[in-house]
Image (cartoon, rainbow, N blue to C red):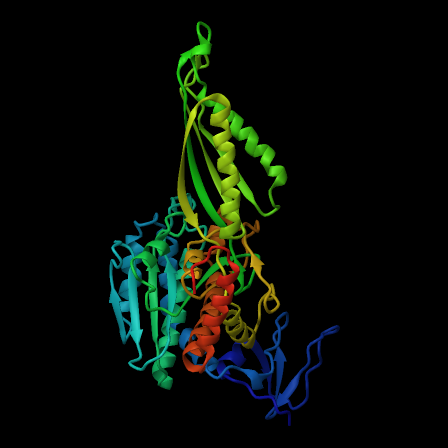
Length: 471
């Protein structure tokens, strides 16, 4: 008899075929997997899927987590579908707010606060084990300040999946704490307006994470499976030039051309791009090009959106771009107003949290492609998220997960992805992510010293960020 043992009948049946013959069935030609015998059964990996890693290394709490979330799926699937087909703009996610809070209020042991943190559509759910221990928070996104949530396109960023993955993870974590008498708290924060609205930043400023040790969230796509996601930092500049009007034919020398100032700045920034880093992004738009062609333009203006791989690099880039705008004013005699609209900080992942997530992700059967990155390797994403601001305030994990793509392979913010994010296959991937996130949270509460390791890693990461808060 082989020594292999399985960690859950449910997991085995979902990830493996079982054969009662004491003899191994013939392997398909060219098959690279192996079959092992256990108590008279032959365990054969499902074709096209990886075999579960060494069962002796299966995390202690994974069978319970798997069973709990599997039992939640019949309730979470219709909730996921409701949110997807009822898209709402940021800070107006009333349907999602009501549906999610009603669902959480039906769960035993949870205390739910509607319209929390001074926002109508933010909310908080707390499970307290009654025993001292860490506090782990999951963020549930709902809506966005973006055309994604307009009729005809809908939730093209998969916020429905983000919400239900966090609910699954939070509920499973709480049940494990109760079942195994572990200390700690689990919170789920309903965070509005991720797409440009900065809902998490407002939650942070309002104290939502004041007593939280770790913040966890996920985000779907089609390219990556990774708990080591680094996003870009971005900021927004509104620029207004003020000149002096004059008739362009009779007395142009009396005028100061604000549009000339804007054009000089635009060209200066275009030239600057030659000396910027490959991962610097400068987006420009002239929003006010004057009024009539036969006048010297008194007013002109534009917008710049800047992205960089870190907050410190963004500051350097912003300084140089602002110098170009000031040069336009200096060259023409105009004056310039530069309004800085703060965006999001880059997300700094935590390798200790990522290692815990990876352990659970790989222990589940049927590991999907693409593979997770190697330990310590970042997954760079050009997009930005307000979870980045949280990662500068406390340890954070922002998991990227790949859902089955649509027919055109469209990425987030496309009609194709909007359809893909509504499918059962996408929901199943979100549930898998929820299991690994729950495992990470439980490990933090159950493993002595693990939270200290997470904190020490966060301090080292922050020390590498120029201008980061003191620790």
